Image 1 (cartoon, rainbow, N blue to C red):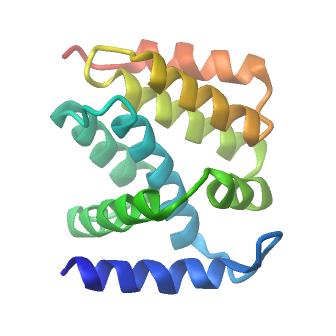
Image 2 (image 1 turned 45 degrees about the horizontal axis):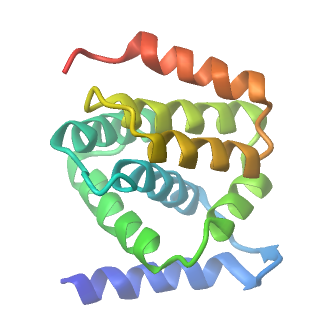
Length: 158
């Protein structure tokens, strides 16, 4: 089954780039995959992908993208493969810079903060990766801080 996911992932990512600097055939699913992979990076970076972080990720993907539970599970599996196979953040941030407007970038960073706060413990590596992504997608620092505050104010008690 993992081989099927990797094959599907390869098909999706082969469609993303003609070469390292040009995006082609980007569709909504690829944007969702990229967003999910970055949220998984936040949840995984501290070596403790907790149940509460997974629940937050599920909730965000269902609400933000209007996906069914099965679609969310497939997306998470593909995004984990994408994250594991990526050697850098470049393919993800390149797609975001090419396809997302400022509002979508803000929403992504807010979602990343929500995943980071889901377990009640903000690890320094989680904050660092969110900051790095925000910088790489050219989100203004004021929006980075505003997204963090919004995520804190909307987090559920652990």
